[in-house]
Amino acid sequence: MRASDFKDLETRGFVLIPSFLPPAELQVCREDFASQPVNADNRNLKLSGASGKAHQIVRERVQEVLALVTQGTSLHVDLPLGAVYFATARFAWPGFKPFWHQDHESFFETQNHYDYLNFYIPINKPRRDKSNLCIIPFDVLEKESPGTFRTLVRGGAARFFPSRDRTLVYLDDTGLEHVMHKDLEQLAHAPELDAGDLLLLRGDMIHRTQDIETERVSLSFRAASSETQVRRSRLADGGLVKALMMMNNERTYRRMFEAFDTAGKNGVPFAELQHTIANLPDSAPLGRKRFFRYLLQQKAHEQILLRFFRRSFTPLGFATVLAGLKGFLSERRARRTVAAGSARAL
Image (cartoon, rainbow, N blue to C red; front, side, top):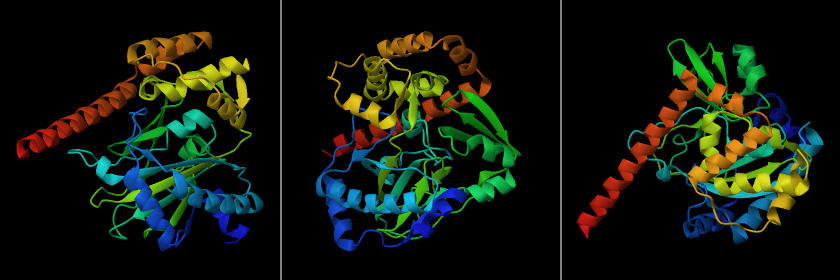
């Protein structure tokens, strides 16, 4: 690898590096995945964290790449954050269909997806042509939909809803809406990956899972900029979907607000914020209802409570919430069906 190999991160938003992890290191990651439980604190996604030797191996390779990215691009990414495992089997409930989006929670937390990288590495990949990531290259997006390019690039937390001859875009970080007069499927690119290949993505990449027809497992190691200014007012801002996602991951967001309280500042560099969070004492969870009231208090403190209600109760806002609720109910029914089948088998 050379520094010049990463210039596409600036223009296209991604770089493909074949055989990034050799077979022996892949096996370490597979064994680690098999031993890790799903994170129960975050109900937005079924993820398990990488640990031990697997985490150490990938972190060392990530740091090598970050040095080259810093040398050869305008991105400032210097802070490895850690890795999680994504498994298609955890999302394969009846009725689930992969949807276009930009990552949400990493943008809520860092507020900067340009200086942010996702090291996406399949570790179990039965078929090269199946269950890849579909992405929208930024140069294609800029050519085909300049307004959407200006709205979304360097941003995050967007969801896309096709509607006849247009695509409705809901920006969950702010609660705003955007109309795109293009079909994302016509702009899509799906790099075919084998186990061990690296698809290096900027955080603001629009993407979706290609399909869930195979039992693919991928490791995703994230890295951010230590100097990014994270603002309390922006963390508190947003519409109803953002509030619901924060309620599903109370510990993360409550500790972020508590870190701002400890710092006594509205804006804090990301690395400093992470250090403060790591040194906070644990506290008993509030539960969903009390935490929602806590969020409303944070919005009132930042004088954005009225804006929250104004932006939340729009037709698209309701459609987004209903779509999420439908997926949740479908998943719960599927789990009950599996559980009932298992009980009958016993």
